[in-house]
Image (cartoon, rainbow, N blue to C red; front, top):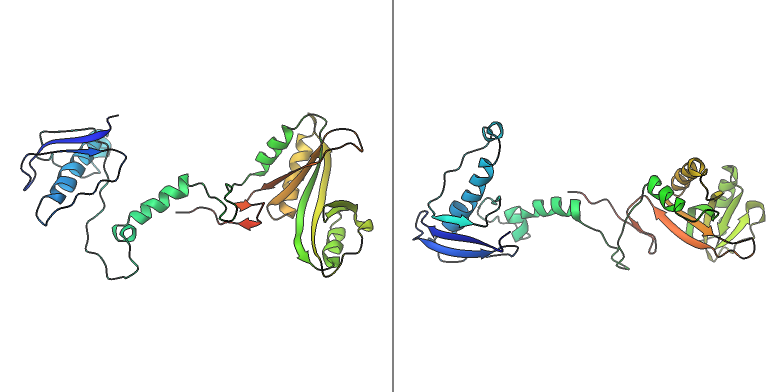
Length: 270
C-alpha cells in the first residue's frame, strides 16, 4: 500500500485546485484561518471520497441501507482507505472535557483497547494474563512422563494469626494435607502457628504422576483447585526419585491477576 494519500486538483467549495500529500499512519493536523478550506479538504473531499468508495464496494442490497455520497470536485485521490469522520460540534462547557471526550474519539479508543489491549501489572510491569482450566491441563500435560505434580489451592497468603479456624475448615472439607509456610504437612501434624507472624496456607487438592491416562483425573482436580482457590492455583512439579526431587512451582489464574504481586484486575471492557 502507498505510504501517502495524494489529493490532486481539489475544487470543493472554496478550494482552488489544491494539491496535497498526506502521510499514512501518522497524525496530520490541518490548520488555517476560518474559511481557508480546512473542512472542505478534510470532510467534503477526503472523507466524502473515502466513504463513497467504500459504499460502492458493497453489494447492491447493502447499499440501499446507506446514504449515497456525491463524488467531490477533485481530479483524483490516490492511496485512500475507507474513512471515518468524527462529527464537528461546539466544545461543551465542562472544564474536565479533553479532545478525546469532546470529539467522542474516547469511545472508539475504549472499544479498540478492550479488544487489542494487553494489560500489565503497574507494580512489577509483567504482562497480566489468565488461563482457563483447559489451558492449565494442557500445560501440565506437556511435562515429561513420570513427572510428579501436587495441585494446591491458596487459602491464606501472608496473613497474621494462628489460622486455627482456616485449618479446621480445611479438615472439615475432607482434605488431609496442606502446605503451610512452604512446607507440606498432614493436617494432623501441622505445628502450632505463632499468632503474631504472617502465614500462608495452601490446600493440597491432589497428587498425581503425569502419564497418558491421567487427563480425566487431572482435569477434575484442576477445576476443583481453581474453585477452592477462588480462581488461582499452584502446581508443584518434580522429576527424579524420592529424596532427590527438584520441585518447581507453577502458578495459574483464571482471572486477570499478577500472581507475583497478588493484584487482581477487572476484565478489559469497552
